[in-house]
Image (cartoon, rainbow, N blue to C red):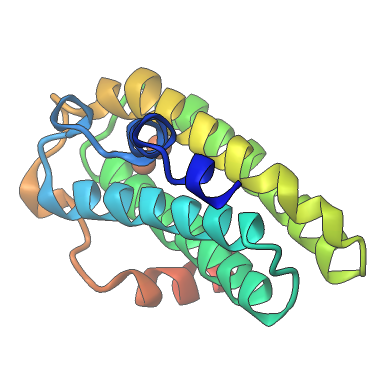
Length: 164
Ligand SMILES: [Fe+2]
Ligand SMILES: [Fe+2]
């Protein structure tokens, strides 16, 4: 069984899903770094759950994921506002809907339904890939380097917590 899990095919298909590829770049290193980290967190959560772990490590991964959702979305939203991006409201609504889904699943897990966490890695990675390709790419040509808040994400996550 273990050998099957480590077959080259399953390794490479996993890599494809969780890999950040150059065409996903929005032309800003800070936002790209956020996106890369998002992929890594999704991968970490997926691997943690696959290992059978359902305790503290999952709880910590969920907290990191929620922190990234809050911090990264605020980083993008502040930048979009600064450059008067025309689709700002629509983009923000998509962030809010996704944030609500992640928080709802995480809350169900924290309330004791441990199987709820299994829904997160596929939701997060599919949403992320689609959102970067279809939504984040649209602000690419509007974005300027100075519009992007370059503080570490944790500061933005704290700011987002006060905003929401
Ligand atoms: Fe993004
Ligand atoms: Fe976005």
